[in-house]
Image 1 (tube, rainbow, N blue to C red):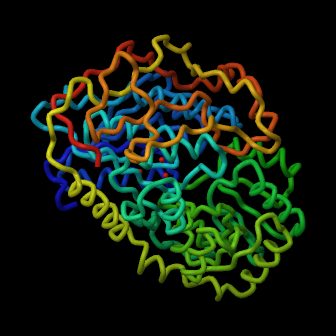
Image 2: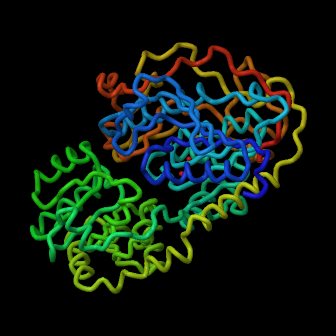
Image 3: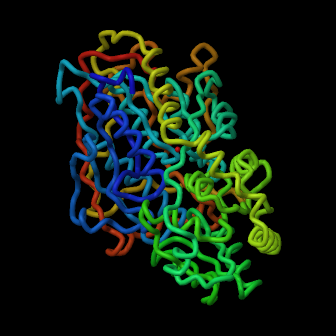
Length: 526
């Protein structure tokens, strides 16, 4: 982009290439776009593991790794990779990402004293990426720019508290959809600092004839194929798809995933013969596979990255989401299909049959994608967001000693492959509440911008006026999935089995990093 030449930029993201999922592909395209514009780009990320939730064998046994990809310097760190998804295990996953990311973060004051860091961006909804990005931006006194593709606060009180703390420290915030703008503003971010940065289409148009691709996939002529896009999760989405397939044995329901998803489907459906799991194809074959289906299904209400690829495929879409959701609004805007209530298999089946018989109501997706969802348009929004953050940043003042240092982590190193987690709350939450965060202290009226900043440790100097330090993570691990009340007040699960300890977390430094010689005032979780 214009204006990034001679800039040094850092992007913090949980997922990055070679992972094939949408969030990693967005992060990769953004970083490589900045590098192509002349910037020195660094990415701080985890080890490749998604969507299979298994460590890429090429990274087995590595605590850290550095590599060059597409002109970008990628800094990887070890972390827990839970093979089985539960609320507690996901919390452990986020905590391990936080610990490993802060330990592996590049030290820019040691790389080059004459060329300093200019911006820290973070891709959310990853809570760990948001916290790490905010802390590093405060440490170096540079603008913090979260790119929010989704928020987790609706699922957990603790997640909402972390998101509020992180986003209020941003110079500007990028929101992937208009429904996120109001949600971000409700967290205390001034609306003038929130910019719309829509997702763009990640796949081109199909290149093979539909009938040829269907024959390659083994889909019979005349058989209605409903292809689900995205991860259905373990809860209502997966149950809805299984119940829909059960109601019509002639319908071929196809989900894209791996062996782990196959086990979850088998446990939920009891081995339905018309419900199958197909391996996730590479980005060159995915457009042909999407276009070969009769109808595409979406069950994620929060505008999943896969939705733009569904538009480009030109097949009608049926979305089982609330009418007020971002996915429903985007589908109506594109004229690409129908919306049915979530949790209603009869409605999903009826809409599928109607669109398979007459796809006309859902074929406007390609025109909408070509007009509004191109990569060039999406990256132009990202460039404008970065330019706004840079324009708002004042000249670097000389800091007081120790200002905005990353708070020290516990001195004790974790057991190899495990994550040390703070104790859970002693009192059980009320029934139906997954996790209850401590009541926040009253915010000082005179300094609303720093009301949520935790007191600095005794060994550190107080921050200079106007410089906000991101507080440490809350005492309880963040829960990012719905959990039954029994999970919320349970004692944390024992260390995961050896099969899940696929990436170790390095020990943390005993002393906080030294302060910078010069700090820029502070001006992504998605």
